[in-house]
Image (cartoon, rainbow, N blue to C red; front, side, top):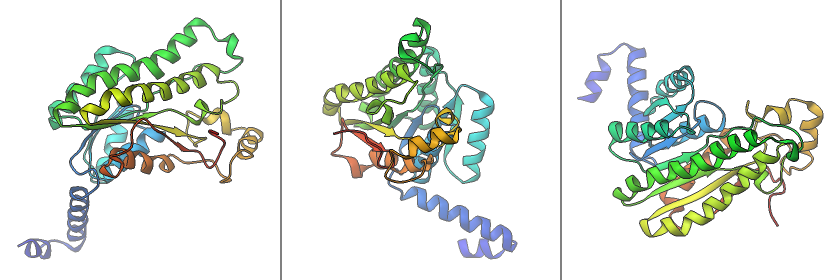
Length: 280
């Protein structure tokens, strides 16, 4: 029957139909088939690459951003790739937005299996002791507190599904601080502590929590570290792999951590940094 339908189509239509069917079949048998994933700050950069990879591996992805135009663009791009993606505006620093993100996933997909907390800010560059109280409050509110509160919201829904996986996007700066980014470095180190603290608390519910620590990745967010050629060269001196990373370098690791292949991994931090120094 399927062959008869395809045969009746224009050759180009037939090709598109076959490609759609192949894409759907691939998702149905992917490592994350029919899992529901929330990814914050996921309309560009590392977050977007993660959302794409989770979708490619079979998940239904709910992405988010602070701006509707960014959400619309990202959703349209991934839907063109026949991925199961939806999105909405979410400022993770606002309690009502965090709750709306949860509610949207439940309404559209009936549950939550995966959370990737990627949202972060850095409004400061300079000596750490020159950072104002407002700077500290903003960075810690978004980078740390909002992550903890979002985890708190998703856990009951993961428990209803029999478990889940949480990935917190930290940074290699948690181990080897970036110069001029003191409060940001501190916030990313705090996320490692949050991960290790929550791992034993969530394990009895079959919920795993791990961190991703990207090194220098070529994104708009990190542009201050690589736009100047001399800065870029200094950063490259610390790397074994002599290039700046790209967002897709991070996405496969996140998909792995969210999959059954990582069922015995929790409380860990995975560094994706081209061999830059990150620990003893």
